Every structure is written in C-alpha cells, then in structure tokens.
Amino acid sequence: MTAYVIRRLLAAIPVMILVAFFVFGLLYLAPGDPAAIMAGDAATTADIERIRETLGLDQPFLVRFGSWVGGILHGDFGTSMYTKQDVLKMIVQRLEPTFLLMSMTLVLSVIIAIPMGAVAAWKHNTIVDRIVMIIAVLSFSVPSFVVGYLLAYSLGLKLSWLPVQGYKSIGSDGLYAAMRSLTLPAMALGSVYVGLIARITRATMLESLSQDYTRTARAKGVKESLIVFKHALKNCSVPIITTVGSGVALLIGGAIVTETVFAIPGVGRLTVDAILRRDYPVIQGVILIFSFMYVMVNLIVDILYTVFDPRIRY
Image (cartoon, rainbow, N blue to C red; front, side, top):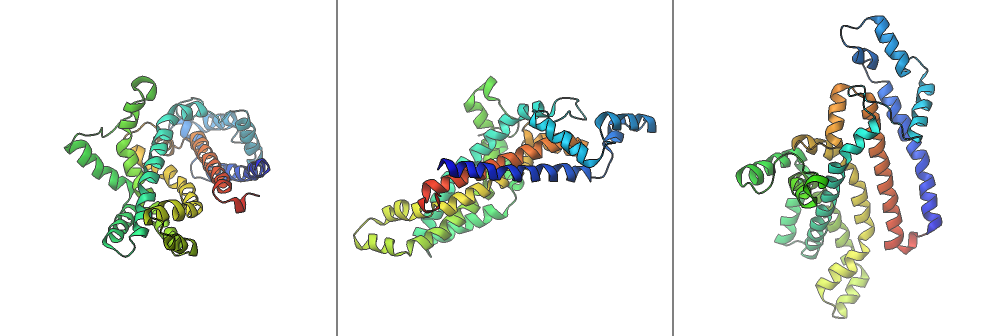
C-alpha cells in the first residue's frame, strides 16, 4: 500500500511539470504586452522597456520559465501586476469560500445523486426510474449559472429563505453563517454534478443487479433493499468514485462562474478579475494551484481504489 502511494506521488511530479510548462507557455503566447499594460497609455517606449527589464520579459523563454519554477518551489508565485501584492497571499486570502463551496457541493451531490441512481436502477423501467432520469438529464443539461439565477429568484428573492449574494466568513460569522451563505451557490454548482453521478450510478447498478451473486442473494431470500444498497452498490463503488474524482474538474470550472453570479469573493472571482485585467502572474498562480488540486484529487481516487477493490492494490 505504501509503495503504491509513493509510486503515484512520483508519477504526479512530471505531470505537474508539464502543467507548469503549459500554463507558462500559454500565457507567454497570449496577445498583449504586460509591460505596456502596466505602463499605461501615456508611457513612452523607454518606460515600457524599463518595465520589461524589471519583470524579466526581455529574457529568453526557458530562462524566464526556469526562474518562475524556481520561485514557485520557494513559495514565490510572483507579484500581481495590478495590485502589487504577493500572488500566493492573494490566493490564500480567497481560498476559504472556494474550498468550502466545492466541499459543500461535493457532499450534497454525492448524498443526493447516489441514492437517486440506486433507486432508479432498483425500480428500472418504472415511473420512478423515468422521473429520476428526467431530473438527471435536466440537471446535467441546464447550465449552472441558469440554475443559480432561478434559485436566487425563487428561494432568495421571493421566499427569502437564503441569502442571494455575498459570503459570511467562518472566522467572523461562524461556520453556520458561512455554510448558509453558500447553500444556494452549492445547489447551483451541484446541479450538473448530481445529474452526472446519478446517471453513472444507475448504469453501473443495472449491470451489478444482473450478476449471478445478486440472483443468488435473491434465491436465499435476502431483502431486495439489502441487495441493492449493500451488495450491488458496494460493487459499483469503483466507477462511482472515478466519476466523483473526474467531476472535480467540473467543480473547479463551475466555481468560477458560480462565484461571479453570487458575488462570492473566492478564487473563482479572483480569476475572472485577473483575466479582465490581464494580470498574468495571478492567472498563472490560480491555474497552477487548481491543477495541483486536481492532481491530488485523482491521487486520492487512486488510493481509494485500493480500499474498495483489492484486485488493484498492487
């Protein structure tokens, strides 16, 4: 088990190097001169060149990339071109609402979607199955920002059950207030995730319920609910875990839109502001940290495989 985890950690290193190279190269080829943007419209050519030298933009690509990676290894993600603040500090300050939003979305989606998919498979070809699949298809098809606007209008403005925008921090307002302020965004962001997990759960459950071991359990008189939620669902855990892990990319991308819709001061909102300002160091830092998070989530998924399926332990 320990050797397997070490191998997976070592395999993640070249992945992160490639991600870092891609992120740096993509923004290096992006249109627009960062030095000219920082200098402003009234700057002279000499002013722009002086800023380019200060930022190291006059150096070759590989030299700049090596310096950037070396700084990251020492915890230096650069300085924002717009606010002049440390990029890592800016991201850390915005990390709490984003992390809590993604965690709430993940938990709510799993709690709702897996029972939905299991019940749909259990009641296959019945009205219950059709209703669940209609809900899953609709939730997967409608964009999260549309769901967000509908939830904000109905539950927020009309019924006044939940706050429509903003974020209450854990430190100043407590965990309950923070979670309450993120309930609507989590529901909106999780709509796509619920549909995806429910459909995968239903498909794998249908296959599992047709296997010989479920027929044997029925022949022994085991209750159908016990067969579905204990035996069949346990054997479906690997593809479900894969879907949950892969869906983290949806959460990362969806968090950017959702935070903008609900005015949440998280990393997603920071990313949008940085793109609009062409603040390249902030964009690079955010993408790199999100990529690292995604790699770590997939590493956790690989480790969970060894727990739920001993056949792939080594």
